[in-house]
Length: 436
Ligand code: IMP
Image 1 (cartoon, rainbow, N blue to C red):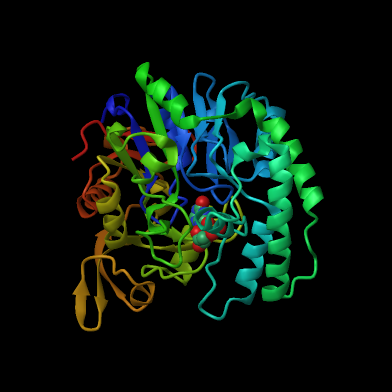
Image 2: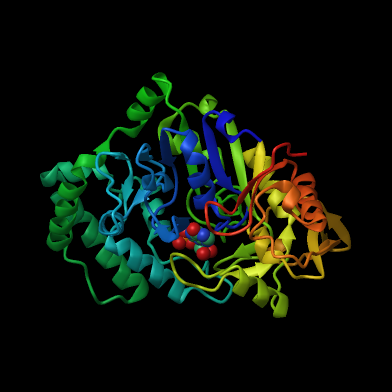
């Protein structure tokens, strides 16, 4: 597979997040001039291991680790300035200077402290079965304020201090009343203090803030190659995911156009990232979840603990029905299959190829989360392999059973596997020359 010939590409997760998009972007980025984040916020956690060092990014595009790459954050993302500035500082302290390689859209909505508190309190009082299991980063309340149009504040507004003061005074008085009435919260926010804090953030962010759509238009016109980096996974998409157990943004490839501000026709390719098994963090149905010893083994071998929250991820067999649905929506030209090494040592592996529900077999992801919570997976069983594949560097190095497993995933999901990851390091990556 020629990853240098994909053109303008979107890298998108096809499961419930944590597929390993950060590593895929990091591998592909050498062929690109710019990397763009177009959705989500500090809820995301992209782990990259480069030169033996581990970097965990939440808000910054994964391109920031490469000197030749421009990193952009489009208006579809929400910005928590404290987290973003902390991330820039932490990279600087480890010798990665972003310099003038970062651009943030002046149209990005801002996360405020009241969003984070609202997120936590709403989860705390949710009835049984009603919890989403959010990352507590204020993401849902921030996107809700955005679409309400009454309470959202965009990054560009920080540069009009008088207006900001006025708006925050009115919004915070509303939020204090809301939090007290609904959650009996007795710790009101001080509008003057929040305004001061955000005006300070504004000064620190000033060098990066611009019209990202215009910037991208210029980059595209001058022939630069652009990589769009998805956050979370397609099954957490606000419309196409397992609603309401989803995040609040568009995580599918369709989010590129509105979240970055480019024409939909710009994309030449989509790379769909899948893990060799399934994981999910937070609440919501997961038909192939393994609650016993096998799930525990996968969790330990795959280090399946959240980058953002440290929560243990739920682990299970690969779900080709849910992932196939995500592929239908995002249209990957090729798949990157991650964590194959984690599955070494099992006698057999299972792939979910259908769901049993009410005496029928479903071949497509149902719309309702409660229906999905009632299905029984229909499994196809494949032989496992004993060998440690972490040192394999070519398709031919992989055991035959591992190759057959990878090919079956490609067939079931509906796109060929062009990249296989066999470990966290950049070097532990197999490019499949001629994906089937
Ligand atoms: P929120 O985005 O914090 O509102 O969380 C909503 C749901 O999305 C929860 O189930 C989270 O665990 C999940 N989620 C959000 N971001 C990520 C991510 O980066 N990886 C995996 N799950 C995520």
